[in-house]
Image (cartoon, rainbow, N blue to C red):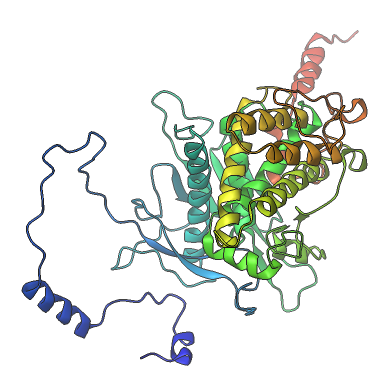
Length: 465
């Protein structure tokens, strides 16, 4: 039997495989104790599909930010984990929706897996593809569970155009940023030298699950609401984009049961205790001298406190959703019936689907926070969830100054009631400040540049005397 020391000494790219002795044993048992002939279905159900699937690959990735300690063990070892992708992935890695780009393609090993050594270009390529794939899958599962079964097309997919998104793990050398770009149909991730590090330490944004999931969130929301990326939209519309990027990372983390179990251990089932779940992009944040990543989802910001900077205003919406998650989890906890980790997993899965449906059904242009809040209340009622769910949603949005409640927050929400936003924080007449946003929100293609053409037109009319 392997000792704990021998297991810990195994290389990170080790994948357990059957020994020769065990293979021989199984072969012998197959010959002597084989199962009988398969039983045919006399009347196979209509939904039964006799379809053979190629097995998916195993991959090795940073399951969280590369500086996060394992919350279950307290180990300083980064959260390197092997994951299984349950669908066919070709060399690259590539699949129908996502294509790795910018570096030499990575080939599967003899077991059909993408197990690469951390710190290499090949590892970063696999890491970036995998997190992008997991994020897209998690969104589509949440929608399908809520009755929205169609796959999510990328913004450019229409008719016969099924072009995938290209993912560049090292797409922005010496750049302290990352972005989704619609016109190039891509995600690009930067790398940079940590300021003040000696010897020089290079930080790769693609190694952060939070950052990859955040930028993938921009691509997904752009597919669902293609008018929301415009810088001429209200500031809260931009805030929804930045917030959804962060929330996409949070709910992707909560879709991984091992991480959910770690969060329960770390917080003792109180999501308002310190946890890596609420801290986003820790390594990047530390490089900038911050103590809790680029953003903290477990915050108390109100709209009147954050102005019009989109990065800041996004935290108001993110914080409200995080509080609603904590409220639903605390309400649903019943340790005599279900493990806390399973309760948190289920609560997050429902809330993510609720949020996605509400974003889809919000106005196609000029959407603000109150629009999403009202949709969430409507869907929660239609789902026959307990009235407490609607109370949590109403109360958290009210405390953030996103809605005005004409009735005390101690009373139950009345089905069908639509809330208004406070006049001073309705966000519909504010101009977006994108100075501190991620790279996606700073791209020129999302800004109205017509004034430049106006200047050219005026020049054409000019005549010298």
